[in-house]
Image (cartoon, rainbow, N blue to C red):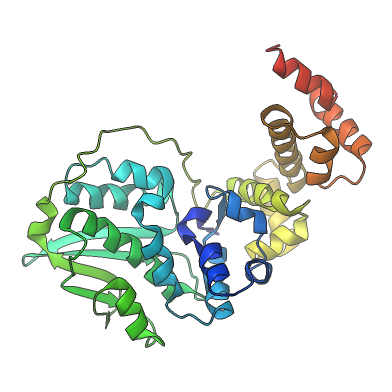
Length: 331
């Protein structure tokens, strides 16, 4: 069974800001990663986890900064993780925050990811791992996770807190001293990405006295739900014009016939999913923004507004202008 981990774009932290401040080209980084530049303005858009890893890797090479992943999450902080972060900030104690973070990461922020807390011999060990078979950028992704994990613990234990031990798997770090300076702790090599600290800290109360609030995020699809994955990737592709099936196959690293066969077995097709994505996006543009029909047509990859208007009428039975008027009047 194929599995495709997805993550919210916001999990990368302020990658565009740091690249720009460092004198790099943000456009070149996104182009090399084959991701739409407009993703910067849509942080809750879902992207493939492997693409997130690749983008961070491209950004690190662009500005020659092997400590970039550590800087991204450390600068952003746990609070930047949207609804996922806000939900965890409502917990009264550190142990509940870590348990909540571990239980909900796969549904609210990043699938194909595992966080796990164990307590033994007076020490707590919080581990992070990616379950997908992804190699490019894997170690940088673990450093990215460490920044968020350390920030969460320090919200309870204090900004000057230092973990007992932090272990990172993989090859020796090229910029170990710089990374340790960013994290403000020493790093050791280990079999898994892990932060260890005295178990007594788990009882630390939340100093911010948060008030519980509901999460306002849609849940991520199951990594094995290829239809949902394809639907999200098509919406992502619409940020950069009109995605085609070859673009999608390249993203998923799957032959065209194999993809078509898997979609057909589930009663859908690429064309049908694309049509639904176009309808959803055009409806949003017409009802939630002031975009003209011409602007909407161009954004959705139509060279001629008349072609878009005919397609929209086939989908809805109304012209784009008629649709907009009826929604504005509450009809």
